[in-house]
Amino acid sequence: MKLVSTRDSKVTIGALDAVLKGISSEGGLFIPETLPRLSEAEILAMKNLSYPELAAEILSIFFEEIEKPEMLKMTKSAYASFDAPEIIPIKKLEDNLFVMELFHGPTLAFKDVALQMLPRLMAKALEKQKTKENVLILTATSGDTGKAALEGFCDVDRVKIVVFYPNEGVSEMQKLQMVTQEGDNTFVYAVNGNFDDTQNGVKAIFTDAGAIMQIIQKGYVLSSANSINIGRLTPQVVYYFWAYLQLVKSGALKPGEAMDAAVPTGNFGNILAAYYARAMGLPIGKLICASNSNKVLTDFFKQQNYSIKDREFIKTISPSMDILISSNLERLVADMVGSDAVVRELMQALKNQAAYDISPYIDKVKAALFYAGWASEPETKATIQEVFEKNGYLCDPHTAVGVKVAKEYMAETGGKTPCVVASTASPYKFSGDVLDALQRQTAFDDAFLQAEKLSDVSGTPLPKKISELKQKTIRHTGVIEKPDMLNAILADI
Ligand SMILES: *Cc1c(COP(=O)(O)O)cnc(C)c1O
Image 1 (cartoon, rainbow, N blue to C red):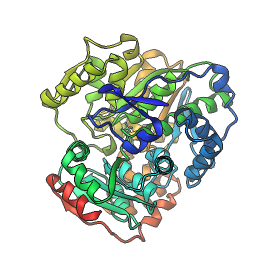
Image 2 (image 1 turned 60 degrees about the horizontal axis):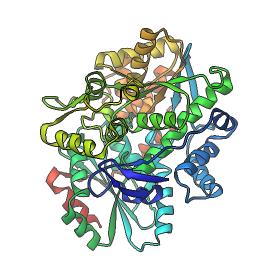
Image 3 (image 1 turned 180 degrees about the vertical axis):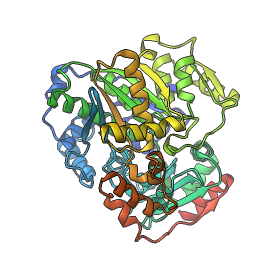
């Protein structure tokens, strides 16, 4: 599939090459020039496929260079480590409200779904390019991407990966998962600052010709495992098809009938994948964009104005959504305004004035596909408790944000359309806060004791990945300042 840059439509690239390149040289993101539309019959024909089979079908649409049998091998091995037989279980909370559990991979967060595929796509891209260079993966993380990328790329040939996370910006369990990462090719640093500082630091390296030169001189080409990489986005499109087909199979949806999708959102990758699935013909009604107290996206959809001016970065119990500059939104903006010149202008305004106004350009029909809402911290906690007590389901704080906004939308509209909430992390990654929400917090500040307690309180089993973590040695202890990120990288390669 041919992709173009959001900031310069003359820049085109094949999907597989874009996986290696990550971001376009002038700072734009790669988007499909056109998305093929599947018919209702074509979609329903995939009803009985297993998850890896469905993934092979959908991913082959994007990566035409990879033959379908080969793609199937890749998807099968990518999802072999998931601890649920269906890979992505769909569970019913109540009438017309479902969750799809995306967190059964090695790091217990939805990022695994894409990050178990990305290294395999990258290996194919390297093979095709016949390059002799090594690849350096640079990643900024708000908690879950980092660990999932480290797991995905651990001991992959000709690849080194450096992960930066905001010191104090991630949960104890997330931090432990990262600092205990094994593999000779993995490097992890805490950066003094918040996620946006960390992400901006990484973005600056990607667009700094001098930095890129120094990295090339060491024999590495730069690539990214962040959700701006098209190799991250495409595997996420698959599970919306999956959810839809499972609901049809179970009779919760009639064939052709629309479902809504509610997504706890940070960098706008997950919900953009739903938007792409819809553009490919999947009957999705509303795209429900759920934010935490960092509700820049809620305001964006309500006011058609993206502004981080005077907006304080708020640390919440859903840290993977603590983001003010939502990178993937640029892809939606590009689609809604339909002009690279306008995207350039808007992104320049974001950089210079910390805001942009999209209202003069917006495609009203496309904008109306979205419903946006947010959950405050008390609302998030109340939702965790309510869902546990009323629906018998234990959800993590990110998922709770999604459920809260989904329920709000359903209450406003009568709740006649089945709605699937993306459940993005295991509650065990955030045991302390979940216990607190259930009003069962104890004096423990040890993340493992909290996880054990949560298992007792909820009657759900402690995931093996959590208990195993306890035995692991801490290997990565570096804490650095933002201006030292490049030097840290150069010392490692
Ligand atoms: C990354 C993440 C999100 C946000 O997803 P985006 O694609 O960045 O919008 C939500 N929940 C969890 C648990 C995450 O790890």
